[in-house]
Image (cartoon, rainbow, N blue to C red; front, side, top):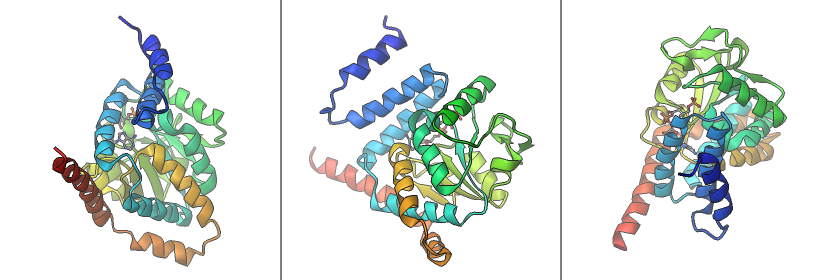
Length: 263
Ligand code: PTJ
């Protein structure tokens, strides 16, 4: 039987760039490497599989509606007094460097927050993010608990997520997003599943793959630098989360119907 190492090395070299699903397969490989390096959890592989299924239905592209959500999210973070970016194992395995760039552009520190928390994995993710140039990374010394959550995700840092007014939560499971909103914070989710509790609870949900969403947000943050607060406010205000979720579902239905006609 092949070990995970050998599978990893083989598939990394075996996937030709011309493969029609090259990007998706490479993303899968990044997560496998994340598990191997103690960054992502084994459960993270299953979460990625669920995300892939929704991404497939979405056409593996950033839709116009997702781009509008990304713009509204950047506007909200630029207007925030204390924006913070929450990082879990999957986000770190797939987008560590890009999240650090976003953190710099938006002046928003990162905080490692894990569902399947082990101190070893927190330390590895903190050190990965620091190696990508992030100065401030919270999460290894949480001093508060988010009310209403009975698992490890409740752990938060006063100077980070606990005291934030806007929190970006990529690839989240539902109850923390709801709890953050109950605390009076604005939550921005990146979630390929428009039906999830997180997607419905968030102030802004970006229905896009994190590997596309975060680079788009970095580019938008650069473009929108210097925009007056009134303009940023108008962009954020105009965004309607229920409508964005409906548009994501419509896009998926459209792709299903197109495929159905060809069967
Ligand atoms: O590292 P940990 O311990 O904090 O655990 C992280 C995971 C992701 C395992 C944990 O938060 C989890 O179990 O999450 P869920 O409940 O599976 O939810 C993850 C959501 O992210 C699902 O709705 C997926 O569809 C979505 N998702 C998965 N991969 C991606 C994604 N959304 C955007 N981009 C992806 N690549």
